[in-house]
Length: 279
Figure (spheres, one colour):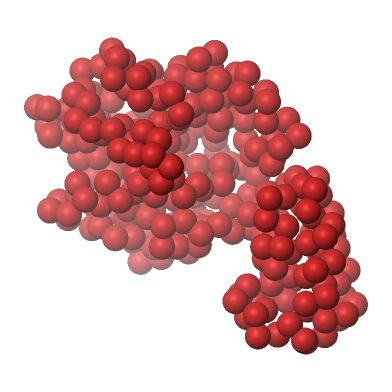
């Protein structure tokens, strides 16, 4: 069979489990052939070997179980880089790029800034900031598995900056020392009910700890806001990603920090809260 025929057949199989069956089929086939997806566009007439078809069939079966494509191929693009991902970490989302953009704006005149990426997961936030800003970075997460993935990504994304990165296993601020110019965090912000509802969806393959924010979704966010002022330098900033109903929480939370802005995502949802120590 040709590349075009294989893609059509795979997309047909995936149409009931994916909103983008053809795209999924193309990404999976490109992964099997060891090429970029764009390379398939000029190779539709090329023949697919029996071995490649067998390997593709195995990947399609995984996708039919609703496993995310990013886990199947082991990578996800975020901001300007390609990150390694597996089931130990949340898959980076495009909306989180707004947080990185705001961090880079705030740090443009602070080349020696000290940054904390809390609940770092894959490290996509902190490493994206470090890639474009001269800074020292702490990547912190409760999960040792997540920190292992973050180490892999540090070696891939900023191999020349490894001496500027510290990895800390920590339940939020428990093992964090010192103060920072910027703290960035994408905390779990789904309710328990919303997290339970991920069963049977691609989200069920991702770590529950990355989603579950307690009964109303804000348990972790409130803990961060209660303590973050102790870890910010005078004039430092906390950037926190918010869920769909997170903005009211950010505006009314008990905190020593001052809320200075709430940034909207591509869909117009208030997505990133910007706090400052105001000292």
